[in-house]
Structure formats: C-alpha cells, structure tokens
Amino acid sequence: MSIERVKAYFKQHGMAERVQEFPVSSATVELAARALGCEPCRIAKTLSFMVEGKPLLVVTAGDARIDNPRYKARFGAKAKMLAPNEAESLVGHAVGGVCPFAVNEGVAVYLDVSLRRFATVFPACGSSNSAIELDMEDLEKYSAAADWVDVCKGWREEGQEG
Image (cartoon, rainbow, N blue to C red; front, side, top):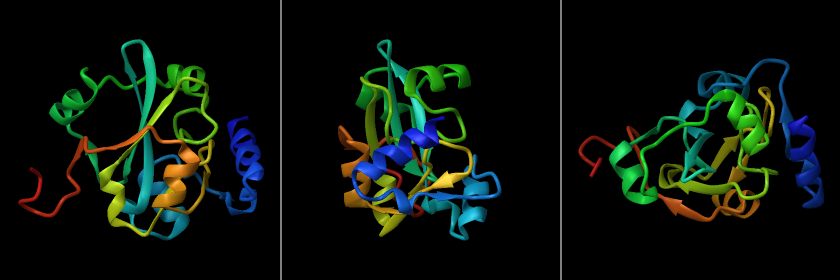
C-alpha cells in the first residue's frame, strides 16, 4: 500500500507522525479541503504526465490548472496525463493519492510557482484519505523536486496571467 511506503519514507526523516489520515475521502481538491478544513487553493494536487516515455509529476495549488502553452514551452511536449492504471504502476501511487513522496525511481517531480503564495500546503500521502502539511522548504526537500516551474493558469489575480 503506498501510504505505508510514504509513512516509512517520512519515518526516516522523523516526520511520520505528521501524516494525517481521515475517516473520509480526500481524493479530490474539494474533498481534501473539506477533510482538512482549509481553502481548496491550499491543497497541493499532484498531477502525473508522460514526457518522452517517462513519467513526471507536477505539484500545483488546488485552484491552478495546467496551461498547455506554458507546459509545452517548459517540457517540450503536449500535456498528456497518465491514465489511472498507468499512474499507479509508473509513479507508485494510485489516482486520488498521487503525491511527490516515495515515488518510483526515475519519476521527476516539479513544483509549480502557484504554491509559493502560501506559508503551508497539504499534499496527499499515497492514499485517497491522507495528507501532510508542509511549508515550501520542506515540500521542496521531501519531494526531491527537480525544479520550480510556471506551467499553470487560473490562480493569479485578474490581469496577472501573463
């Protein structure tokens, strides 16, 4: 079970007790926000894509959407999300619990700048009813992020989408 894998990962860093599990689903941004009692924009959703035959993850704010031209400019390919069955086998976590922690070897993780406006965010922890609260420094460290990217739209203030 991938939540156990994530807990083991955080245990190595002395943080396993920070992983939260809920009696309700947190599989979508809205459900996670309800379970945590926070604004949906503070949910760090992890999206899985395929680029040049390799899976990659982009962690974005809950209110952000992939901007196809920005994505293509950054990754050199059209944004093609993994199918649910592909996500679990290629990334190591099932849809609803995909997270940037304890992923399969060779999976690159990128963090979108839409997250930087928050002191802390809540990514999932490998199951459809889990999360952990992390600040940006810890998110970057524990996700082993390759880089910060700017590939989303819909989250900036009016007139700042450029």
